[in-house]
Image (cartoon, rainbow, N blue to C red; front, side, top):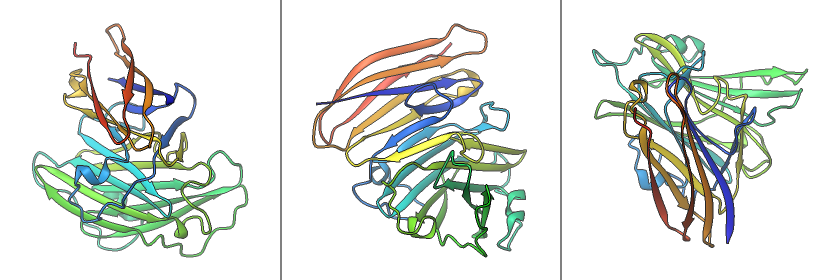
Length: 292
């Protein structure tokens, strides 16, 4: 019998994050995916059940973005996988004017993926992939502490898009060999972040941590539970309700202490503390309602 602590924090001013404890860095333990998802831009929930799931993004001031984004982060031993489902503009389509593969893509409706193989170390490198909806892609790096700047880094990510039911859906595969050669996703800790750059109006937003993901720490562990939060209300209107989805990828039953905290700007906080037992291969949905 495994025993773990799961924490969820929701906030009208903070967005939504699933993390291990309220510490300086948001820490996530994510299982390895049993099977690689097909990168076709269509998003099949069954293919992403082993990933960590986040609902909502916050802007650079830490305020929840009203436009909806649901994102997923998963991994096999040799690759990271990302899925982003974001709201399309109410009027018109996505802005996609940049046809060249350069950093000017940021002026379009765009998505960015940040990966740091050695977060917290004084000497290191952060890899950035920036793309729009028409296939323009830029690969950038930021070094620190005298780390050598790699010339013309190309992550060779696999990226696919689709537009369905008022959503822009993107799926990404990022091979580890193009980021940290000789390393597996299960080796050590990583900093990861998904950013959605909005054009109408123009806003930077990110999940699960800050813009570049510097305050996130991901560990990928075979057999760990997969945790996802699915919001069903409009959080910006304080309609805070949804499901905490727990999928046991391990071979043993897992007993979890689930702690959910909602901090509101004008109302008393709402919290839920509950024990949940999940059988091997079982998926449990825990409803949560903090509507005011």
